[in-house]
Length: 201
Image (tube, rainbow, N blue to C red; front, side, top):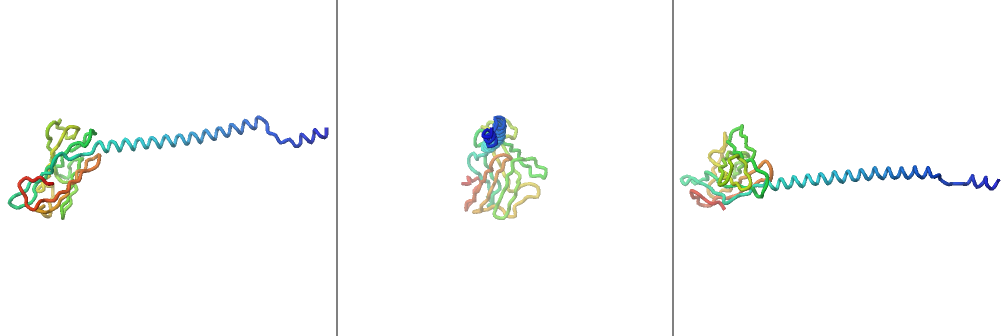
């Protein structure tokens, strides 16, 4: 009896119930961590997908120049009067609103055109848009359509004038900024001698 009593006192085992409780706790903790990791992964992949779709929409809305940049000068005074260029969609993308700017404080244009010369910078000049070829006359530049943009340097809008005319050998910079997509930068320098109509390379 004494030997059996000693054996019972030194027993260091664990019951099956305690083992089951510990296993259930481990499984529960592992499940919680797995759910957290999966949720974070799904959220990250969803955000990446949204970023990718947004980047694609931006690319599909890019403008592209169609043809040359034309300049019209005043032969008598030798300065640049008007600049003409045509725009189209770079690839098949969403329509771009090119409602012209009328040069007033309440202008409703979404596409902004800015002009920079050697001495002046005007962030939103007056401009007109004339459809060329096939179009539905809704001020939306859609796939297969072209619009000719005209900027009159002698009429840039209410209270907007250049401090100095753009003359021979003068550089100028035009930026076309649509509401969606990247903008177009047009940099040109006038030739040493001006003609009535010039192709500005």
